[in-house]
Structure formats: structure tokens, C-alpha cells
Length: 383
Ligand code: ATP
Ligand code: MG
Image (cartoon, rainbow, N blue to C red; front, side, top):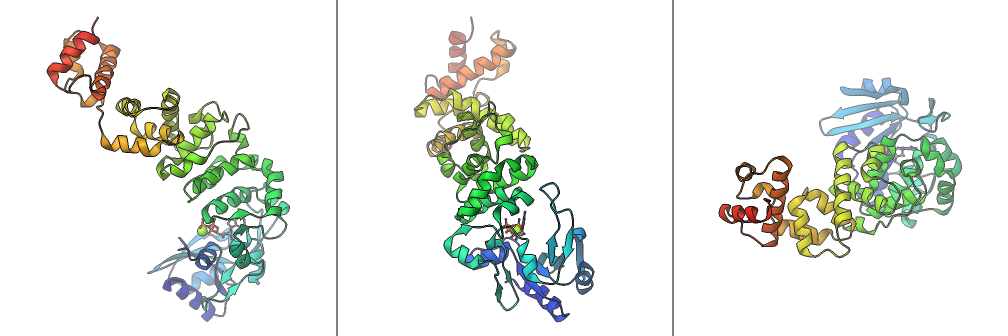
């Protein structure tokens, strides 16, 4: 446990309160993973927490959360609570503060996320989280149907944690997920996208296909289709969202890869990339040779070409060709648009001629010199 977390726990317990590290950080520590943040649960109220530390931020007083800032780092400190009724399947209508850590742990989504650790390293684990880590399963705390009905986001979180941790979803939890997946229709696109992207950025990005298989993305698709997610394993992180959209498009799950990502409220540039990549994807022949890929790299945005090739399971080769750089783009030609104008070309015809020349140089049909390109343009681009 980092020193600043120990310090937070010490100060709270020194003042007579209970205090524990809880949730993901305990799970990650037990698994030998490095937690990316630490959350603290305490019997102290927000006011009592604020009174014990010099620097605090009232992050979510309604939910009992204050952020405590120490020189070594900050942590969210939340008063033990029980969640009231979930009215709209999203946030609890109300929360009630409670005195028992076990009650706080019982509101949490999965057994592996429902453990607490005190400053001495003692673990509270009332739902068998350690055993589920050992069995490598994601299992709901309590009755799965009820927990998913309360908060449909938990279904997407189950898929996400399974991919991130390399676990499978336990039988009863999975059965409930399959049955209640239609409730995901109510979730905001932003929250679904966040879980989808965490899944795509995990060591098992193919897990994202499960979101489709279980029906969690139904509202964003025009047709229910299974995707072939295998290519995601070989796709670099920064292209995975676009490649996922291509795979959905290729399977006929959407009519438009760009619109699919816009529907999910992905950043506009991500959606645009998917749209451009789909254009390339369609142009590619079934078994593109190196020359064909070089021609694509000469004409199109290279990220779009790489994404299209990744969706075809050809990322490595495309990447190698992009790095080898045996292709020339229109703006790298030794002949400029203005010089083509002097040869009598105008507007669109200039852009087309530049592309023709770039492809000719890329193919090795003509050297990239002013004289050679002028002669080639006279012969091939001017009527
Ligand atoms: P990560 O490594 O992604 O931060 P995490 O387990 O810390 O994983 P968070 O989303 O940060 O997950 O949530 C912190 C903790 O709060 C979880 O471990 C879980 O105990 C609880 N929690 C979060 N979201 C929910 C939810 N929708 N329903 C029930 N409990 C939740
Ligand atoms: Mg967290």
C-alpha cells in the first residue's frame, strides 16, 4: 500500500473511525497487479473526513465522497453507504450512510470488487472475492438479476472486467446478463462507450465481441450480427475503436462504420477514421499484394490504411510497408500543382494528375524528378 494511503487510514483510525482501502485496488493488489488508483471507505462522515486533513475537495458529498490530497497523492474517501432504490437503472435515487463495512461491500457489483483491506493488510471478504480471483470468475454480489436490473451498466462492466482481468463470467451471472441485456438500451452512449473502450484497450480486446453477442450494443446496431473479433488481437491500441467499427460494418451490423461510432458518441476524429478506413477496406482485393498496399499508402491517410489492413488481419505487413516507405504521396512529388497548371490542367484535374503521378512513382514506372514527371504528365494526364 502506498505511504499516503497508509497515512489516510492511520489518521482516520487514530481519530476513532474505521477505514479501509476498497474495491479495485484491493483486487489488483491480491492479483499482483499495480492499482491505478486507491479508494478508501470509512465510517467517518464527509465533514469528519474534511476536519482531519488539510486539503480536501468535496467531490460528491451527496454520495459521501471527499477527495483527500496529501503530498504523496490523492484518494477518494467515501463514507460507508448503502444504495437506495435505483429508479432509472442508473444512479441510486438516494444513498444511506451505514456503520458496517460489510454493508458497504454488499452494494458493490462483483465479488472481486467487494473486498476491503485495512492498514495492517487484513482483508474483509464477505462474498468470496479471493476464491473468485483464484477461480478467475466475475460473479455478482448477491442475486445477479436484481443487481443488473438495479444498474444495467454492471452488465457492460462484467464484460469489461472479464477482458481486463482475463476472467470468465460465472454461470448464474452470465445467464442473468443474457436475459437482462435489453435493459442496456437505457444506458447513455457515453457510459457504454467508456466500457467498450476499456475492453478494447485490455489485453483481450476480442472480449468486446461479447458486448455484441450478449446484446449490449443492440441499440447502436442496425442488424444483430456476430463479428469476427480475432483481428483485434493484432491491432495496436490506438486503432482498436476504428477497427472494431469496421468489423461491425463488415459483419453487416451497421450500414455505416462512421455513423456507428457517432451513435456511440465516440470522438469525431475516431468516427471519421473509421469512415475512411471502410473506404480503403472495400477497395482492398481479397489478398492484396505489397504493391497494392503501397498504392493505398500513397493515396490515403496512413492510419486509415493501417486500420483497414488490421481489420483484414494484415496489420503487421501494412505497418512494415508504411515504415519501409517505398511509396510517394502527391505532395512529395518533385512536380507541383502549379506546374501542372502551366501545362494546362485546372482544378480537379490537377489533383487527379498528382495522384496518378504519385502512384506511377510508387509503382516504379517513373522516377520522382521534375523532368521525368513533366514528360509523364504530358503523356498520361493531358488530353
Ligand atoms: P478500475 O481498475 O477500472 O478503476 P475499479 O474496480 O476501481 O476498476 P471503478 O469503476 O473505479 O472500478 O469503481 C470502484 C469500485 O466501486 C468498484 O471496485 C466497485 O466496488 C464499485 N462500483 C463501481 N461501479 C459500480 C456499479 N455500477 N455498481 C456497483 N458497484 C460499483
Ligand atoms: Mg477505480
